Image 1 (cartoon, rainbow, N blue to C red):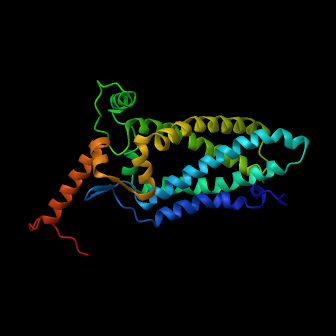
Image 2: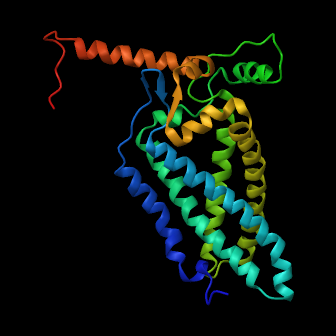
Image 3: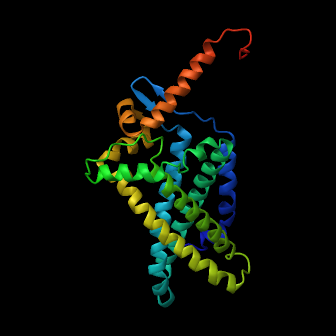
Length: 269
């Protein structure tokens, strides 16, 4: 058994992780999605790092958090070793989770267009109905011209963001309680709120894993979270609206590059 819980001896890492994520975002050079021959760049390296640090850490936090709940009572009457191991695993996941989440948050604030592409639009209800109607086999529906992210994903994003913020705020208070005298009344609110948010996150992540990793139709997107790319044919079928936006941006870029009129200023390298 560890001499000291990492939540007690290495607390500074919990406070450092958010700043490390923000600093990393500040020095990261992002790439915008673009068409590259017969494939499309969907995720740059930063997006892949954001996704996997946040996603894997969230999964470990959920598993270790459930383990802590199961092991807490036995630890009161017997050896606390399993509880301590679960707490140390939870600690490592917290540090990675905070880095990944703040890295994503800072990247998003530095380019608000990345936030806007995650937010639902006026098409949310109609596109979601058509999309899942097709998945359920209703032939009367046609594939909507989805943008980079499905409208159903955008609605889920709002819930995931709210839950993540709740977990972080309540988690910070729980960490502070390891070194500060936090009022018992406050902790009586913080702890159940943290637990409820965890249950909500679990309810979100299980369908996410199913629809993003287990369902065969989503495998091209899962693959893109490692390679960064999807095929042009896949983008045409599943994300026609997004592909149209990329083509329009590409055409505008070429028009600007070919404009040699004296009115248009030329870029100097």
